[in-house]
Length: 361
Image (cartoon, rainbow, N blue to C red):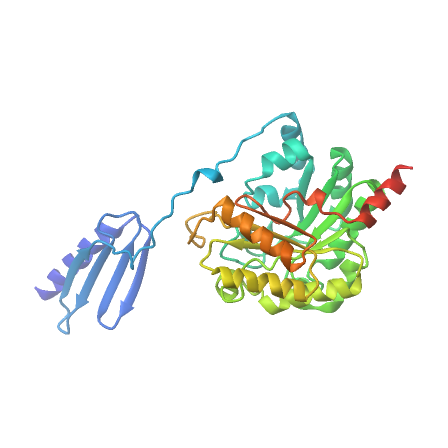
């Protein structure tokens, strides 16, 4: 009799949670099932020594479930699906190219593709070996190395007649050089075929190995960009395998290897950081001779990613930009929709402009 009652209660529980996302937390003899999108979001079971089960349900409190923040009006964007945008999108598919603009769901894709003719190409595949909790790029085992990719990317840049191109990459921890050689060859290929196009690289930390960074810096990109992403305290929670100090070291070494090449880094805010921590990041970047900083609002790509803790207003971003410029950055972009490569074409230095002028003559 007791077995039948036990079986019926378990069946009742399973019927209630079937086809729903369930997280089960076991605390001693208590089992707490959290069910997404359910009015009775919690089912609490107490298992008695004799095998009986008692189930109770309760509604979540603010402590149990994070409150979803509504996006403010200033995050609304204007879609510009003009012929320039459509042409670039068609070419990307024909050439089997990946862009971080699409993979990371950048809100500025229509402005960059449709108005400024700038783009951010993502090389070394579309699958990343890391699983950062803010990023929408797919995670898993990458494809085999495509050694023809540098020439294919360079051909596309030439066809698109881009003014400025950012070459970024998925993290390739499966490769000894972290993908540095393919990235360097891509820079050189673009130089040969599009001498008027300025080239910015946005690599991973390349495993933190100095020799890998040297391979890349020997190709002499116009800008070396490596993102710090978040404040020191939140780095372990936000960035998979990456380290705050390692990123600072990466930027410092890049400047030492090629002092004339501007270095750049990006910070996303809205993850629970304080203003003091944001200013600490600015100080740390300047201490490592970083020239350019971008600050943008973190936007949650999907429900599986970290939630937004705060939406900063344009006025608050303006204040942060002012502080950054007072700290000594040569250029700072700060705004709700600013991303690492936002208006990147405006950030090239005088040496790059001189090289482009010489190529025109």
